[in-house]
Image 1 (cartoon, rainbow, N blue to C red):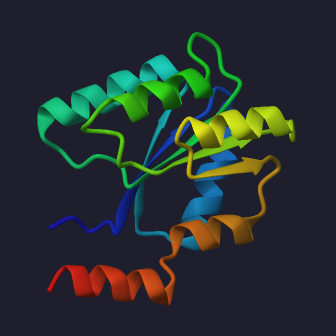
Image 2 (image 1 turned 120 degrees about the vertical axis):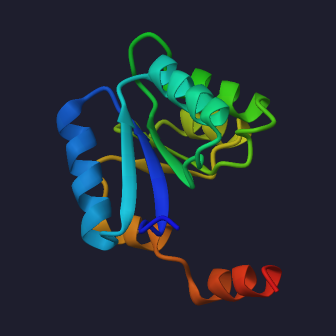
Image 3 (image 1 turned 30 degrees about the vertical axis):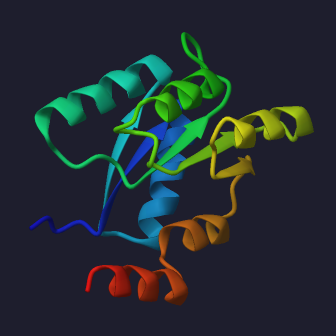
Length: 142
């Protein structure tokens, strides 16, 4: 059994932002295994390898929108079209507060759209299960 409570994939092209997101997550919950990729192509390769190695997929993906090669929206659409990946919640991150961008992300299957800079309290709410979700997961495992 893994010593980690969950696994998270961060898809962020800016290494400083990725490091800050990782540190914030680990401050909220230290028993999380974090993987990081720099763009959508790398993220999809990582997830494809994970599927084929029969190792656990991430429990959640934090993904920047503006990235080189394959942006976050393109990557989100590809994820949601894959039957083995579509169940993974994706949280989109952006410095933009553009409403049409936000609507596109949510229509494409993102769970949440968060504007950067991110507040630690937002991560805490997303990472730590609420009493209601804990009760739900407990009752569904019985």
